[in-house]
Image (tube, rainbow, N blue to C red; front, side, top):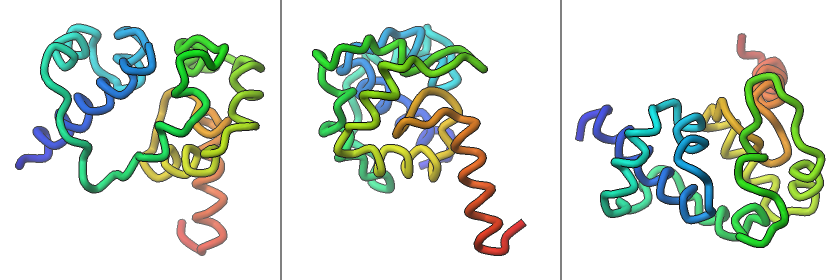
Amino acid sequence: MSVQTAQADHNRWRAHQMAKRGTPATTIAKHLGIDPDSVRRYLRQPCPEQPHSQDQSWQTRGLCAQRDCGVEPDAFFPGYGANIDPRVKALCARCPVRYQCRESAIVHYEEFGVWGGTNASERRLLRRQRRAQQGVA
């Protein structure tokens, strides 16, 4: 399987997971860095199996995965440089999978959205701090 095919399958899988939580196609597109037409095309196709290299089973236990969490999906993907909605921060603060969520976002270089109560800037800072502690430039 080519790298491009693997990336497309990963994006298709993630698009389906986000759509199940009620996330609009435009927000999914922004999160994945692709155009909304690609998202709509992905969602017309069957959901592929979860990529083996990325166990994301914790996501179904996240408070944000619950349709009645009290926060609309768009709130988890504020525009670039926008402040995180306090309701999102509060939900993340009491989420049972906050650590896994944040760690997954750090490891997978999530550049959009709130993951584990952190935005992209906070995650970049955490990555830099970890590299400095490990003595890696």
